[in-house]
Length: 271
Image 1: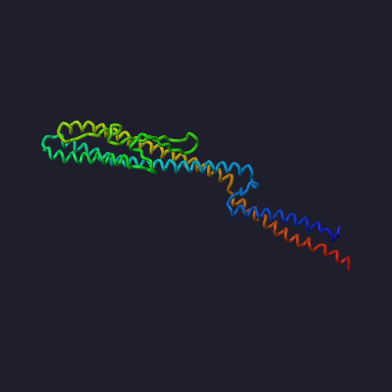
Image 2: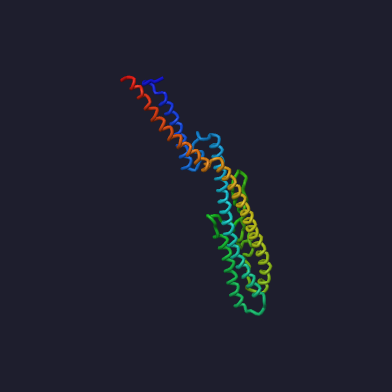
């Protein structure tokens, strides 16, 4: 029916053009953002899954950083123990030197002064070595390295490397005479063994944390891949859809123009 009040063809063409334009706008949004899901209306269920995955990924990545910070802390403490080791070796060397009878009392007094300086330096290292204000060499406190979950952590025990009896037990040692120097050798052997035990403990905790970092990195990588499959846009597929929508939008625009001109045919009957 030829009518001039209602242009049904133009309305139909406009409706299809609007649909094509909306689809084209959606393709442009996806390609510009790189995401298939930009809002909940794109994929409500997919959005919920993606956000949960993103939270898990963030926790794993922070857990990796926590473990790396723990390794840095242990490296700081283990490095300090390397210096303590040198001091204890020097103290034992001085004790061995003072234990022989070929030195005078004045010479042993000089050795004893250096011996005591080494002991004081050990105490200074034990009390001043800190990581983020955490001291682990002057007490037996435990530091928890947390990396995901409520119970997913590694406990790192501190060590008492002071010269007091609760630590290396070398307070009061002297090498001022032959007998005391000989007695100091035994105490220093025990102190070196105590230090080695703590240093080794820091070492295998570092190895364990490094293994944890590797596992966390693998988990995060796999979760990122899964999240990408859900959330990221397939560029090739979306470009094909965009091209199709562009053609439909262009065709819709042309047909709308034609539909708008058709009622003018009725004017020839009114002349």
